[in-house]
Amino acid sequence: MRMKFNKSSQLLLVSAAGLLVASLLSACSQLTQTLTVDFVFVASSKAAGPNNYGEIDIFEVNSESGRMRQIPASPVPSGGRYPIAEAVSSDNKDLFVANRDDDTIVQFVIGSDGKLYPYYTVNTPGVFPLAIAANSSNLFVVDTYQPLPTCSTAAPCSGSIGVFPLLAGGSSSSAPCTATVCIGTAATNPAISAQYWPLTLAGAPSDVIVPTAVNVLASGGYVYVTAYDSSVTPSVGYLFGFSVGSGAVLTPLAGSPFAAGTQPSAIASDATGKFVYVTDAAQGNVLGFSVAAGLPTPLGGSPFPAGNAPSAIVVDPSFAFAYVTNSTDSTVTAYSVSSGALTRLGNYAVGLQPVAIGIDPSTNHFLYTANFLGNNVTGFELSQSAGTLLDSQNSPFAANSQPTAVAAIPHAGTGSGIQP
Image (cartoon, rainbow, N blue to C red; front, top):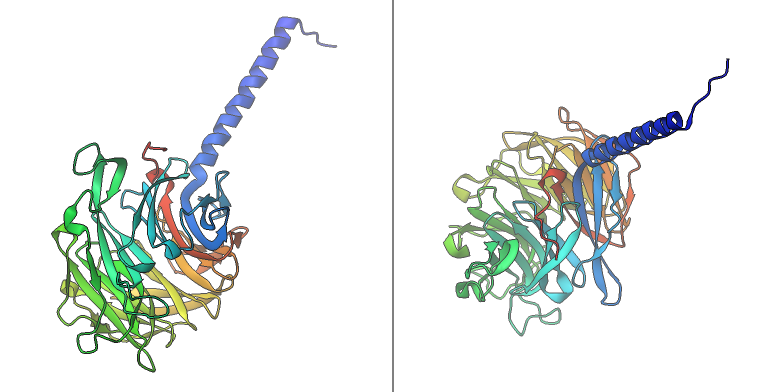
């Protein structure tokens, strides 16, 4: 028997089908949004566009597979030439990018969809910034050379560390900006018009001290800079330590700088602020320090073996693991951490010449490296029980030319509502 449908029945069926499709699309849309666990910002240094600016690739990370995919608005100009370092504000709503060849830091407001909106640019105190770090109160920048007119690549001098207070946004006279965080300058705080500290040796002030990295403890009370003396052969490594006072005033720690291998290249601290780790590019190892009251004391068993020319380090904030990129080997070394000591778990292949590393801040479940000569990003899923690494789906992921830095925010933590 054949069934017949009148027009009203057909309309009802079409309407129901339409509602079903709409419902499925809505569900898929919600699922897609939910599956984006993080946004990762990768700075690529090679010049692009009419201003010869570098670029920032914006990746969204899938929470199930770790697959990284660039959002439609990616990439965006870095706001300067040769972006070399990145840092995220403590509220995950602002990205700071240091552009080496312009001596600038560009502040980007992060939209709720991961898009970047250039907001403000400030000059660094010295010449050629190479590393930055941020907490809730301050933005720290390390420059290759001090802000002296005689310093240059032809006439090098020692580097310096500068500090910019991070002020609450709003319309008050003390912080006349509308972003959630404002970089304090001479216009907002005259006391910081020349707030920098030279990295020099008391016994050899003419020696050229080359800084390499910066790290601020979770408490915000202490900041450290790795550097080496290039005036002697072989070079001698140092760890400069400062206490951070009110008004962004730095005070060198007693005994600073401290011995730190031959050529320290990167630095990281654990989430408790009890331990600091420094990679030594020349020796192929990791120096570990306990930092009670800020003073670094070498850990038992330190230094810990790494690969050739270690270049970056990250400590998992939730689980007892640490990871080091080895630039010459194009590998990542995984470690377990016990009472600060590192035990090597294994090496994992990544793209050519990794120079930066990060862990997803939402779940601490995914790890990624920026590979300078590979022009890509390697992604891993890490075992939260064993610390071992498994390639993320479709890894490696294409980036723009010569990536130098990575920074990330949790998806749930984005969005200031300000989109200039």
